[in-house]
Each structure stands twice: as C-alpha cells, then as structure tokens.
Image 1 (cartoon, rainbow, N blue to C red):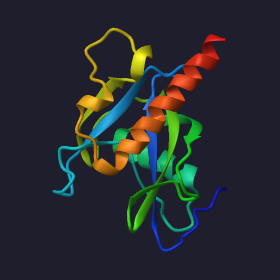
Image 2: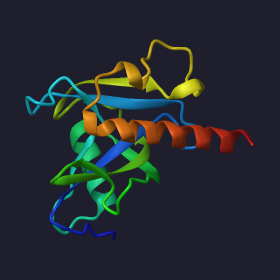
Image 3: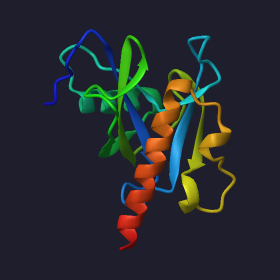
Image 4: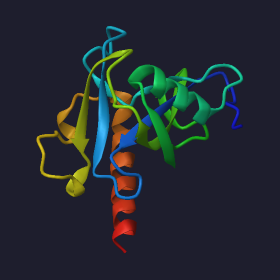
Length: 160
C-alpha cells in the first residue's frame, strides 16, 4: 500500500474522472458548496488522505463518499513536486485519471452540481462546456491544463 508521507503539508487526492482512460474526451467537474471562499467554484472531486491511508486508497474512498462511484484509476497527472500540485502553503494534491466502473456520479457530499465538460478537440458534440468556461478554484487551473494535455496524449496514443 502506498502510504501518504506527511511533510507538514496536508495531502489531498483528486480524481480527474474521464469518460475513457484510453482516449478521454470528457471530464467530470464538481461544483463546491463550502467553504464560503470556494462555494460555487469547480474542482476535481476528492479529499484529504487520512492517517495510515495510501493515496490511491484515499481517492477510492473519497470518490465513493462524495459521488457514490467506484473507479478504475489510470495514470497520475504528475505535479511539480513529490506531493503533487500545491493548493496553498499548507496543502498539496495528487491527481489521477479515473474511469467510472460502478455507480452513477451524484453530488452526495461537498458539491451541489456535477458537469461533464469536453477536453479540448476530442470531445463529442454535446452541450458540455469547455474547462475554460467554468470558474475553477484558482489552484486547480494548472491541473486542468495538465489534465487536458495528458488527455490529448492518451487520445493520440489510442489512435496509433
């Protein structure tokens, strides 16, 4: 089991839930309800790693609690540091691509809306918004860009 390492930062995990791990064209975004500073902004669902819990184990637990789903994890969206993407001076988040294997995503905890958005030029013709049109939590902007780039690489690999 991958044990979370505490370096004085809160370790958070997030899921970049996509329609396909092989050739992702859509991403599930979740709109926060709290705290007040982030209410109404969009994010990757997930949460804090609990003591003694591995990163991937925590992500599975968080997605089950928040969205009522079981997922298959894909590649990690590698951040700039060993603890992932800095969220603020006290917290960092590691993010994995994930595909729903059981259940239907629902806003059960911490969110009031879920929305499938297109990922760049590979998205199907549907009314989903692109990620630039949603008010993301500011710390997630570089993660969204990395998710989009990795999705494009995966689609290219799937096409060859």
